[in-house]
Image (cartoon, rainbow over all chains, first blue to last red; front, top):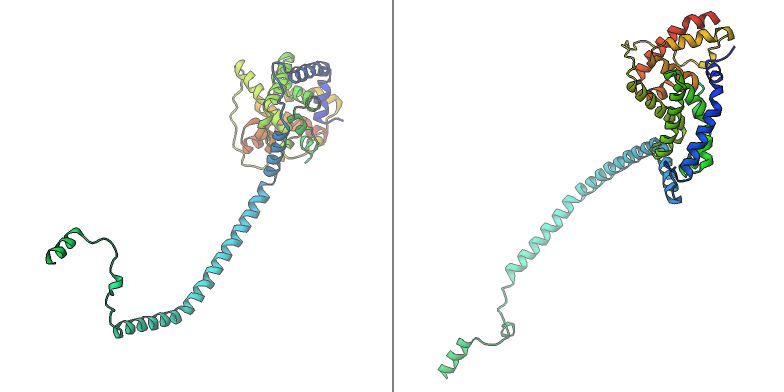
Length: 140
Length: 183
C-alpha cells in the first residue's frame, strides 16, 4: 500500500538526473554572475531583512500590545482629567473670593490717593523744539 | 494535519544572502515535487522541465518578494502554478469549469497519507487523476505532493478558499470509487 505522494514521486523518479543537471546549470549560471545573477546582498541589507521579518512575525503581538497601551493611556487621561476638574471646581470659590478682595483693595487705594502731578524731573529730556526756542528769544 | 513544507528548516535566509549552497539545497528539495506537479498538469516532459527551470530562475530573481521564509514551498509552487497557467493559455487548452458553490463542509482537511492505494490500483488511480479537469487536478496534486493546507492551496492557485474546497470535494468524489474499494 502506498500514499498518493509515494506513487507520484516514484512514477517520476527517472526524471531526477535531468533535474539535477538543470539545477546545477541554474545555480552555476546564477552564482557566477551569468545571465540571471542571484541577489548578492550586503550584510546590512541582510540584517534589515531579518529585522523586517522579525517585525512581521511579531506584528499581531505588537498590534495587541499597542491596543492595550492605548486603552491604558485613554483610561489614565480620562481619570486624570476628571481629578483635575474636581480639584479646579473645588478651589474655584476660594480663588474668586481672593481676586474679588484684591480688586476691592486696588479700587479703594485708587480712590483714596490722588493722582500725583507730573514732576519737572519727569519731563522729557531732549533738545527743545526750534519754534519754542524762537518764541523764548523774542520775549527776551 | 501534517504539513511537510512548513515543518522543515529551509536555508532561505542564506539563499537571500546569495549562498549558492543554500540555493542548491532548496532547489534539490523541491525539484522533483515541482516536476511532478508540472508534469501531471501539462503531460509533456520537456515542458515540465522548462517550467521547473523557469520557476527556479524566477525564485532566484524575486526572493526579495517572499515575506515569510517558512512559506518558501508554497511561494515556489505559486510560481510554478503561474507558469502552468501561462502554458495552458498559450496552448489554448485551458479548461473552463463551472464550479458549484461550496455550501457544504467536505472532509478536505483529511490527511492525504491516509489515502492508501494498493499496488494493483496505482494505474487506475493515475488514470482517474488524469481524467479530472485541470483545476481539480491541480488542487488534488498540491494536496497530495506537498500536503499543503487548503489555505496554502488557495494562495498558490490565486483562488478563494471556498473554490478550493469545492474543487477538492469534487476531485475526491471522483476518486471515491477507488478509495472506498480499498477501505
